Picture 1 (spheres, rainbow, N blue to C red):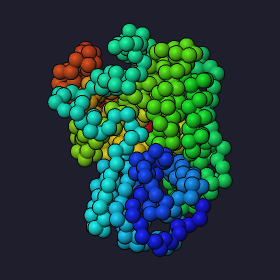
Picture 2 (picture 1 turned 90 degrees about the horizontal axis):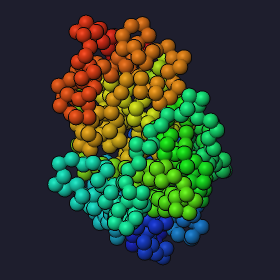
Picture 3 (picture 1 turned 90 degrees about the vertical axis):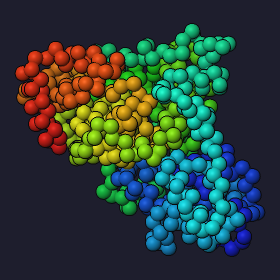
Amino acid sequence: MSPAASFDRPVRHLVLVLGDQLWFDNPALAGFDPAQDLLLMIEAPGEASLVWSHKARLVVFLSAMRHFAQRVQARGWPLQYLRLDEPAWDDAPDLTQRLARCLATHRPQSLWVCEPGEWRLQQSLAATAADAGVPLRSFEDTHFLCSRARFARWAKGRREWRMEYFYREMRREHGVLMDGGGPLGGQWNFDADNRSAYPRSGPGDIPPPAGFEPDALTREVMALVERLYPQHPGSLARFAWPVTPEQAQEALDRFVAERLPNFGRYQDAMWNDTPFGWHSLLSVALNLHLIHPRTVIAAAERAHHEQGLPLASVEGFIRQVLGWREFIRGVYWEDMPGLREANHFNHTRALPAWYWTGQTHMACLRDAIGQTLALGYAHHIQRLMLVGQFALLAEIDPRQVADWFLAIYVDAVEWVELPNVAGMALYANGGRFTSKPYVASGQYVSRMSNHCQGCRYRPAQPTGTHACPITTLYWNFLDRFEAQLAGNPRTALMVKNLQRMDPQAREAVREQARQTLSNLDGL
């Protein structure tokens, strides 16, 4: 791809395409006139280093952007593409600095953009346009099935926000898995069928997800990232993520044909050296807008109707896309910017250094973080019940945890990452949309995985030489917040189990927890 060119003609609309909005149905491109308008794409060092991003995350975004730019050029549309490593722009490392210079150079009649997926960027784009005296037109992101305004109407007046009720409305509204006016199969939710661990013999043969050999353009980006960000975490040795719409479609087709049948049953299961399980790995393509959620949902629904795929698996998958994904985006925009500062339990400890290396004696976290460093990926239970839950029990500052999640996963965009981490994994917003803190002892990990076999820690032991840190900190968490948790029907039974401990045993847990919390880096 050639460096940014110069443009010497008047510009009607300067259309900014952001790095996670890479589709030609982008509403900011509607009515694009190559004779009058200019498309702008910006790679910005400031965005690349806002958090200490995994190398694979940087490559996913930059490669997908450059592949999209190639398509723009193939259409003959005028494009200004600012690359990370253009010396002429070294003094403008931030996206908005680069945008401001483009506005000053081109003096367009207006700046058009699809609404960003990040509150910070939305505010800075508006301020930059205002400072330049250029009218900004922000378009609703039609890649989602529920607009921000639609979610706000749903949420208004509700004391509690629960995804299940939102999901039912989305099913009705979009006619997904419906039988007349009711849900297909007679029930809305097959979650109870989708919580199995793998057999004791292991997961067996799981068809691999679609993977994509990096082409010349992606290899060029990989070399750039290695050169500019050699100290950033993660590896590119196994990079195989989709970066084009064709690859995204192939990933969907392979998932539906080979992996969706068993996805539902085993979606919560974990096993050593089994990083993908039966999961779809489509979040990268969805979050970069390489494939539309309608396409994904329709493919899963067809697989049930035409091929007889289990309804529990199909419904469980669709619930993630039509339910949770749309719901969590609505939560983000309703609760920002306060969600960024939420800290219900007033936790302030520093993130252990092994979150960046995977070098911990806890086998479950070593496996989850190790695969994340290798691939930029872990599935939702690994994120929630391993790395997220440990951060909650270990009293880690929610902002540090959220920054780590944003940095380390290839599919991380703030609208989806922050509410999942602060709201669900850490309960930092005090249960705005969750009915309880998601906490469990090491025995949960033992039930759902084989991680505990051979680990130096024992999941059933809260105290002693081989006490599992997760188990110790779980009982310590219940002890610290006993009154609060006893008043919640979803956690009252946990507290009753705590109250069965004799006073000496509870004090032993407190002492073990004090030692554990004072040595987080050494676990």
